Length: 124
Image 1: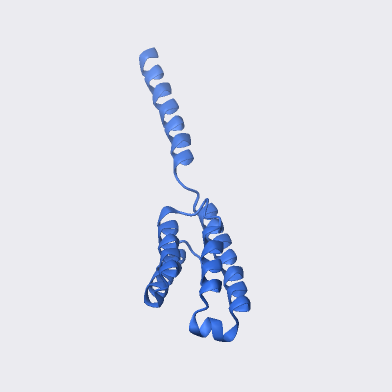
Image 2: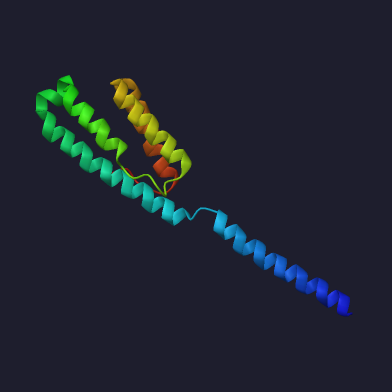
């Protein structure tokens, strides 16, 4: 009887330890959502600044200096806490901007937004 009690206690301890350990390794979806929201808010501000610096014609015809500054600022956006799939999508978007490839910029931005939707973020 005492042996059964020890087995039950050992099982309970194992379940508790595994449960605590599981929570430590499973990403907090709410924290990830907040990190994505923060990154997209930074992106909005940086985009607004790019349009202000480039002006109407620079935005329309691709002011290279404004684009270069924009890419530098994009790389400074804190992505810590964002899920890996969002970070990959966002980094691909930055690469598209570096290449000045408008088709890739559009395609990669769609991927960023779709990934954000997956985490419960509506488009900004």
